[in-house]
Image (tube, rainbow over all chains, first blue to last red):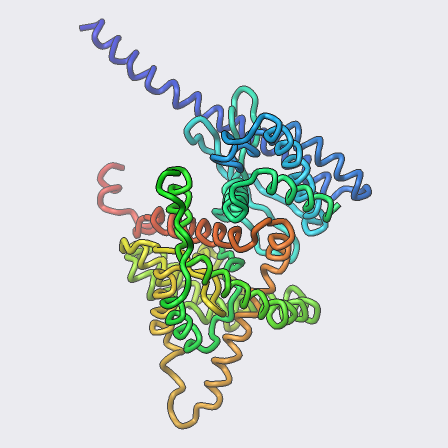
Length: 199
Length: 275
């Protein structure tokens, strides 16, 4: 009888264990996003020239965002069809595109603040909710998806008002590739043009 | 979650005949070419994109984009330049308050009593304490805003989204939302008043409301839309993706909103017996 009860409570405990571990990882993800967010806001609202800010942004991006993972996701099924050389080229220009797009938004985000919302585990990841407030703009609900929250946290997606950044990007690329006979080189060239036009 | 009207680059109230004739045109014009059946991944992509009328949709996207560039965007820029932010916020609140009856009707049709209560309280508070809706006092008093339209109601009732549509003037849509747009006009009490002999005032009111709605929604997304057009390789595909994701998020919020109707201060018999 005692063993049975013991076993039962053990089973109950082990069932609960992953839950509390997951909750902890959500807390860690929240702390991670708070720190990344503070750094981003500091750069956006801080002094410094556009080029200096670009350098700082790149630093934060490389440290806290899984650029390669997002890049692969955005290419979808075309990633597997690409040659290693194409994959390398694509990832490097994708990194440039990401930095350029974020830097282009800096002026628009002047005076930005954010407040932390709740965070919750989702599959292997954690979702951290925030509210981003910009002057002259309605407050926006922004969710940050964090991979490996308890070991090596990295941002893998940003969901603004229900729209996922990486999914939108993936569908943009997919449409471009469909209209260019699935030629990855055409996409890479278009991305390069985009970077050189905006910088 | 506040509405993100970004994806509706539209003149909401502009002649509905145009929209109707557009639907007719849609019936007779081009379709996207299906990928060959021996490429299952391409077929899966095609089905997921669910945009069989893409060539036609792109034509209307180009037309809307042209109209936007010469009319709506300059109007929105002028509005932002001429009118201070605080006043614009007030205008937005008034417009949103005028939309309360339609929202309430949809809250009820969706069977969401707490949402219906929020809408009712918001309308009563903001119309009085908020001086005809200029100030959104209700949000501070615990009655937050939410989105509600007949497209969402249909979704909750189980009507599928259907293929993507890009409608002239109205912008991105799908059959469900296009039907919802029509139903919302019918549900709106302002559609039915001011049809008597002395209607000049009402007509002026209705047209100013629609015009202001268009300029207000466009002004709120000026930066976002400019950014998308600058950074997307295929802006049409990007707007399509954003529109759908945003609608799905709104519907998901609606579906999840099952707040209890018993107010917190009311000790229900069930709670009383356990205390």
